[in-house]
Image (cartoon, rainbow, N blue to C red):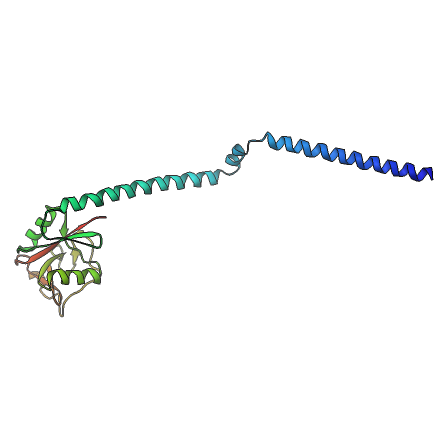
Length: 204
């Protein structure tokens, strides 16, 4: 009987000792965690994440500056056009539809003196806009093949990719190097002909 009791006491003390050792280990682990600088560890162990974060912050700052600059320019344009008859705002651009007539070269000079240029028509909606504001009347646009016959370019140097030529147009060869818009589409004509014109001034 005494042997059983002795054996039980020994096992119980063994468990207490194990429990005490576990408790000490837990407290030691907690102290090591408390004294550890996780911020330093994060920066040391994850340099790629820190680099990506810095890159995103820089990109965000740059976009904010660009946005503020665009707002500033947008607000300035209406002031520049204020009091000038004929300027119309449409789809982020200002357009001037002339009431007098000039040659293609003279028309373009008029536009450029006012910070604009002859209109560049990028899509069907803009072509329909031109027809609406001109009533289908002939008007110079910013397209020509003066530099090279048959290679039609816009005034910004871009090549023509989307067109609205009238039936059997263009057909003037070297005699007709400038383009006018009219009710049926586009027509090539002599650059010296006297026509109305359309200026375009982009906001963005």
